[in-house]
Image (cartoon, rainbow, N blue to C red; front, side):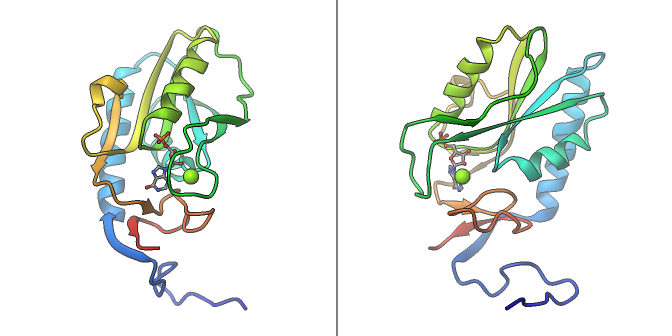
Length: 187
Ligand code: IMP
Ligand code: MG
């Protein structure tokens, strides 16, 4: 049965699997505005191609793009490294490839979260092989302790603790992507 949300209510308000807020709505939007301004400055005079990694990055991509004052273009790729489990299988598979040719393009990979870095390492190598002008990464979240320089992350939103998180695009078995903030997942 459909439960109607009261005005001002948020999804999953009564869900006991959702723990503490890790990054709230306002903090997300404020940081995304900063990232957008930085990208606007760095890519001045160019038309970067934002490559969103589905499905987790879809909300971040939408909000970030509206903070970039440049004629950006969009493409999407879907990769699978997790299945429905909450730990990395180490196997990355392309589920949906890009539509556009990357030759000569300034590619900006937009990712939801860098955990082990396996997915990103695979993606970067794969995209670099398609003759782009440049490939950079904008990740909303990275795990605390991950070496930002080793992973070569040009733009990072927030470093977060090791707890599994959901919301703002991030899921557990496809659930919780529409939670409007990042929260820990209690299971
Ligand atoms: P990595 O290959 O270990 O870096 O995993 C990256 C991918 O795993 C992300 O794009 C997410 O889809 C997923 N992932 C990693 N940690 C979390 C989490 O805390 N919540 C939801 N998804 C996660
Ligand atoms: Mg996922």
